[in-house]
Length: 617
Image (tube, rainbow, N blue to C red; front, side):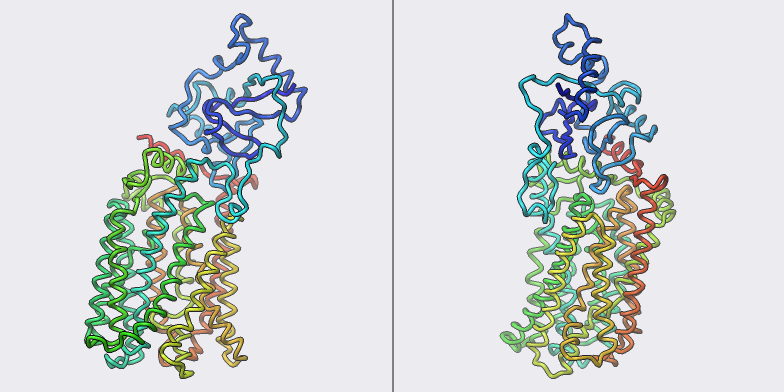
């Protein structure tokens, strides 16, 4: 007769057929099937003989009281944080799913768990023993295929994780409904207010304000300078101030400044306002990725980061359609030109989204007060992040900066993002629109046709994110996005190519954009063990990326070369080659860090220990 084995971590059920925790199904024991029926039967007999025959409970569980001297409190540490003890038959969670690996070989880890009261009061060797319990004789041993959880087909595209409990599914659905929706709308209005200057420039603002070609670059540079100056201070502030207060407040500021652009009378006024718009908008992108990385596990993060980023493509499309409609229907209404109505409509759209942020943004798992999350959701959120190795916040002091700048993460990830941000022209220069204008297309078509490129960006962003999360790897998908960008830049650098190929090259220009959100998701995972490092590194990446963007496009894409941009397209082709190289370097260093010895992938438990202790305190 086959015997059962009960996990020593009492109260944590483990389903070997699925390789996942099953706390909701059996909170007191984890039932397992032995591969060798004969040896397991002998082990059962041996343990049974050691119990007190006069005690019926001892006959059923002969070694339970003797080996478990301390009650297990499953609420302290999530079950998925623990690793299979040596000699155990229990399945090991995959490190690629965010679980801690190799912990059974780390004496310090086990000592720390015992010190915090997370283990039974016994030595480590007792963890290597198995405690057999009885199985009803009439209960047949189920085939592995019969106990696998059945999941709908779409779950293989969206968050396929068979071990996820119904409670966790509901929790993630709440996050998606509120957090992802709010951040996507916020990024939508941020990009709407950021890119509307390029749309307005080709829709009459240049002529009305008597602007020259280089002034559009100066507008872009002013915005970039403000954007660079605000990011790192904002990332430090967000470790001290609730995101639900800081982020919507800055959104309101840039919304008011968008209304001011409609009233600008000179190009100098536009340039000055653009600086403050950039300063206010600088907080949003790094803060959003920091918040996403604080709520979602690695198997979930890529899709959410890319869906959030895809809203920028939607903003680019919407801005084109909106300007086309405004130019046609409101140009000259109440004495305002079409480009002025564009800024007014953008501000009207942005205002309610800013106000909603004060009520819907859930802050971070350790301090959330969102009305749509109950106490169970808050506890689950903290447990999920501990199981993924994401440490909560601590004091940001000198020691934190020594940690951050003593690792390779900040250097290589920053170089990677600097190259990505500067592979193309500045935000105020749209080569596709300028080429269409040189071909004498109407203003309406100049605004509408480039939206097809934004649609391609949106679709590829979501597709790349799904694939990246499914294979649990970022670098190959980021390299694929880089190849699309290289193909487009190479074709446009040659320029004298068939008309159909030139159209394809312009449409594929933005196929390289999904690289950005995937790199941010990657940074969240690489720096996940240190909350302060994660926030600061993301801020430095974005800040220095745009610091270079303040002057690189002026050199590589001078307005006088439009629409040919001979120097610019050649630069882009070379930059995509550099982007592919640095992606490979980061991937190699990350794999090397996870395989420190013996060629076996391992996730350091230091961050998990530190985060768990902080959460407990």
